[in-house]
Amino acid sequence: MDDRTVRPLPPLRPERQFAPETMGTIGDVARPLTFIERLINMTLVRRLAVIAVLAAAWEIYARILDNPLLFPSLSDTLAAFWDSAAHGVLIDRTLTSLRVLGMGYAIGLVAAGVFTTLAVSTRVGTDFLSTLTAMFNPLPAIALLPLALLWFGLGAFSIVFVIVHSVLWAVALNTHSGFLSVSPTLRMAGQNCGLTGLSYVTRLLVPAAFPSILTGLKIGWAFAWRTLIAAELVFGASSRSGGLGWFIFENRNQLETANVFAGLLTVILIGLFVESVIFRAIENATVRRWGMQS
Amino acid sequence: MTDSAGNGTEHGPLLVADEVTLQYKTTNHLVTATWKVSFEVHRGDRYVLLGPSGCGKSSLLKSIAGFLPPVSGAFHLAGQPIERPGSDRMMVFQEFDQLLPWKTVLGNVMFPLLVNRRMARTAAREQARKVIAKVNLGAFEDVYPHMLSGGMKQRVAIARALAMEPAVLLMDEPFAALDALTRRKMQEELVALWDDVGFTVIFVTHSIDEALLIGNRILVMSPHPGQVKAELNAGHLGFADLGTQPFELLSRRIHGLLFSDQIETALTSEAHHG
Image 1 (tube, rainbow over the protein chains, first blue to last red):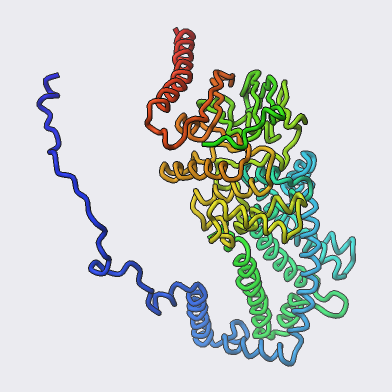
Image 2 (spheres, rainbow over the protein chains, first blue to last red):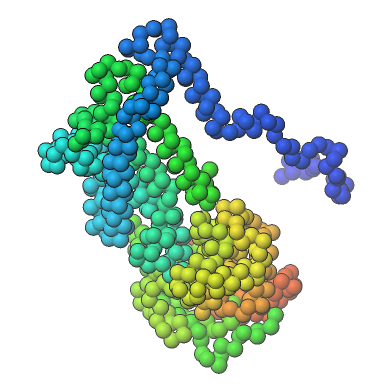
């Protein structure tokens, strides 16, 4: 008890009160960034810098190696690219590939939409979808190609079939997990506003789960694109017009290595375009604008 | 505070809870949230459900909203039994994520009007603008929810609910997640809005102060399971009475009602352990 009397109290100090000071004497409240700072902040600029470094490395290595049959330089590849695009079959081949891809992607999305809607409406649907995705998601779509060829023959339909398979499960899985992660409050708010049945799915769950759905769309796209090129490499031309994979395969057989590189470059360019232009635009118009993704 | 809209006695009670028992399942238990709770809400009431956590006040509100059907007993709204969620009982939740992030403030307020085909798009926009102006968010109509502060989000939720002109407005601790200064401001605004528009509201809170400031009638509940402890009048108390003797007396009385409970539970648990 005696300790308490000994313990020193903090000193009693006078109270203080101030009028707000003007900021001018202290410094800027906010300062616009310099041109260089803003330039470095732009993702596109940084990405282009990375590409420029890679391109320079490629060109230098190819020139040192000096073996155009094995590793053509960037300038050779670009020349071949330009040549096949302007005078050759590259654009034709690309369009063929994209047409098949678009068909498979669209069918896959519709099927995924039907599956996930059933899955959120009924418990049987949930079990059905969970089991199917668990079974088929790990199965590489290209592994189904021999079977598809057996069933549907050497046609575009076989490729569409494997593309549907590659898109469907990725999109369905992401959409469904997106639906499940919609907050209970938002669900109740939606029902409270009068949403039921299908309108509850389309007007509440789909937009609320859109970040996940978009991820599913991206993964599905990447799977589909890879599967398509691989499938075309395996069995070449469907009917008379082949796709990009066939273009690569054909040129490899003729030892036109620069053309092979040009074909690969096209695959990469289209992938980049879809990822950083189309999907980026969708993101900017939706999830970023809504503050659901930074 | 004028009780201009409180003429419910002419038409009888608006909402009747008749011996409502609520239960819900957790992964391991069947929990009884409320036990034979009865009360009546009249038109124009600012009816507060007050109690500690675990007294089932939020479950009661969810049940009125139609999300949790009673195990026994029933709710009747204007004579009709409540069976499912409906936009005649618009709800304001505690959580800020009750707004649709993909819609602007205006879009959020218009949303229930359009979903229920209450009016055409242009009329809905008019109605929404009017209510948004009432909650002082006129300058933020075209802003998305993620750019608003917590208090503003709750005001949008209130506007969305009021735009539907619901028979009863349900508020589940709507200000609990706000900072103290904003909360006090929102409480004042809500009462002013009630003065202006004249709606019926059922308000859930665990704060005695908030109950006294907002409510004209307070249902005090005890926990585990939720039962009615008392039903008190607080219509004579407003923000001007904060810190005055009548306010403190009623506050202490409610505190006693809630606190006696804690002693009881403490004693029983001691008895169990001892």
